[in-house]
Image (cartoon, rainbow, N blue to C red; front, side, top):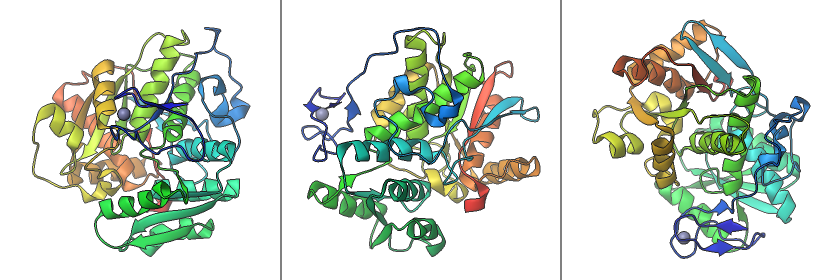
Length: 358
Ligand SMILES: [Zn+2]
């Protein structure tokens, strides 16, 4: 069962389910499931992404053996890095894609659509290949061929759409609304966010069920940010951990709607180095703001210069991430400079995409 947490409407699950609330257009979520009975954590790390399956609303139908990404101590930044680029498709998006395609398989879906020319498009295409489901990936007409190679290699079909990024989404949604396909959207599909909850389960387990004081993550649509928040909350509510970390987001200067909502208009700069998080209208904007408020978090915008400097510093220390990922480290430095982090905290940082893709 799906629910709209904005107006309270509910919808039956199935291949014909709506992709957003039909009354108020808000994104949908799973109705809250019961938490595990025992407050004693039980995990088998051989199950990878599915090690905490008691918390997940979807069973393991489609998997490439993903999950349990490494945690590396980083004395240079006095932080722990979770290497969420160590995934079959090279980004954390596999957390969401594994759950989304597993749900598609559960529902008997035969064809999916998604709109993304970036990491999400590649992840969805690869897990659709694993599931044996047809996938059309809608992309801007000017998307670079190099970005489409992974999508095509997996047997998915890129559909080029002229016009704005919104026009790409609109064309994709039209196909889904017409009943021709299931919308496996990384921004809208609730299964994707159930998948990104596993970031929190793994990190807590890897730290012997303690959580950091703060977690710094890139923030575009907020797929990892919101999933991590939900995971940490469920762990605390189940009694497996005793706190929710402060969730600290990092956006790209020039396209930073969450930062503007919290702090007003910022610097007039741009950050095209971090093109992976340039999202003007996050699908779950209200939920992101609520997650920040509830966790005592914040959001900051970083420019190109700091991002490039952080990227070079990461590469020099063996962390071969893609440029967008470097905003998390640039943001960590910014949070310390501003005093949002005073230097005494236990901090974890998500490194989200591999440099081998860039
Ligand atoms: Zn609604």
